[in-house]
Amino acid sequence: MPRPRQSGRHRKPEPLAAPEGAPVLVLAVPGTPSSAARSLADEVSSIARSELPGLDARIGYVDGGDAEFPALEAVLAQAGAEHTARAGAADQAGPAAVVVPLLAGPDSSLLRRIRQAIMNSGSGAELTDVLGPHPLLAEALHVRLSEAGLARADRARLFTVATAADGIILATVGGEEAVQAAGITGMLLSARLAVPVLAAALDEDGAISRTAEQLRGSGSRQLALAPYLIGPEISDGLLGAAAAEADCASAEALGAYGAVGRLVLSNYAAAVGITLQPAGQSTPVR
Image 1 (spheres, rainbow, N blue to C red):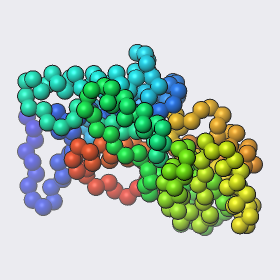
Image 2 (tube, rainbow, N blue to C red; image 1 turned 60 degrees about the vertical axis):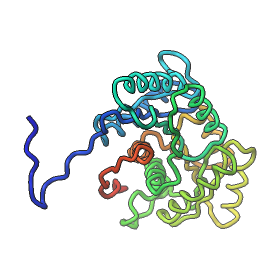
Image 3 (tube, rainbow, N blue to C red; image 1 turned 90 degrees about the horizontal axis):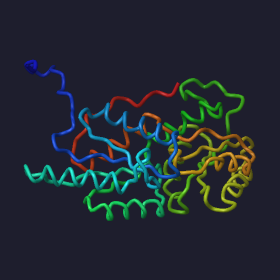
């Protein structure tokens, strides 16, 4: 039997859980399917589930097509069929699924393919925005730079790091639209680190080297590459080539940082109409 609810103004809030019959959360993973991409997507999904118990979260690969890496279209078609079957027994309002792209910034070509998969599946799924720009992604970028020894880990302690960068190239993919969106998060990162941050597209020839020259021309001497990327959306070796082009060190991609999972859930909740419990202070950068 459930425990009686505590009365009074000091009672603890009831734990939040996914409503019965809530749409499936489908994480749309771009790029070439791999074990690394699957591990990352599993961890991001696990973070979302831990924040919202009872959440039905699944993974669909934009370039998938087998049992190990199911295609996004197939995952959505199954969710749509299950939704239709439930609707035969009860009134099931709302979409069968909510698709959250595992992308930090907009990539029009990838988003076009995701929309096509939704349409082909016949599931009536709803597509959310990408994860950024967002202050939590600026925090994640700061953490990845500090892990690589390229930034001070704690703004409160004014110690120096010998290898700390005095200029950051924020690397993204998706052309000019993605660069503009990354620039918003870049301003937040610049405020955290007190160094100039400029965004550049990895998929535009010469953009990384031109941005490096611009930073050096404005006085920066020790540059760093900060990938404004989750990870699966780029091919192996692309970041290394970009760092060599800029003649600087590089941090790791954002990966399954906790903020990524929370932003995935936030986009899903906004689409479904679920009010998440206010989060506490963001994880401090130490």
